[in-house]
Length: 356
Image (cartoon, rainbow, N blue to C red; front, side):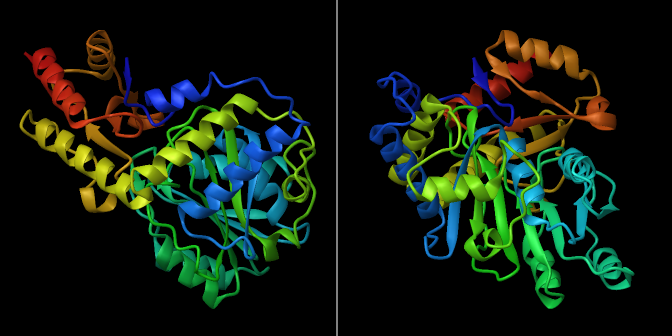
């Protein structure tokens, strides 16, 4: 079965085989060697300096990393502006509410890009100054790639720290870690890094960690960072997920890094889009506004999602439904994981057969 959902992904044989390595006790040097390699390789994905950035590993899904980031980096007296144009922006607002963080939301239609004028207006008109802004990089609700550069400039002008959910973009889309407004990016192993669920991480500036607060127990970002830097860990990590993460990072490097992965995903996405267009299936968003990781398409007028999904699953493909009110309008195709051009050809041919 080929997974075309936005994570977990179809594994390469190389990553799958890594799960068969020896069992490790998480209190032994062999595990800390593995943890150190994962942390070093995460820095290397975007060429980050260990003197400025800390890679902090967590056992959990991407949401665990986002929750840890938000809970730790917005201080007790801080104030957060959440930019929402999809399900995952909503999730950050729910996290802020759960931790009783002072926050507001700038809501957009799910098909819309963030409105920079509206965001700037909210930042400037607030009676109490915002200290942080949170944004989804790749909003997989629609496949939109939000413009981080312009938002980062807004934040820098106002001395606001930017917190980024890069769960489905880290490792395949450009991230400007040099921008002074960017404080942290939360991400996961089982998306663009082609590993398995269970290992997530936050790339965070040391300067932000120094001011981190402690609202959580298991997800305490500051404690995790401190202990990992000392070749330690507070709890039992998902050891075999770490094996897969390290192997996925090795494979990413061998294949040319995030830029090569971006190009590969983009070529597959364009191939699928061209094939669908010949069948009258149109993209939900222009390619220029979409991530290469996932594209959303309007459902064919003659077929709803369930028969399309079930027919493609019988042919060996798993696709993804739209969320919320979009469930009756769109379907989504991700090109993450061990997917090749021949697979996309088979996908398009299968849709041709289903549409008759």
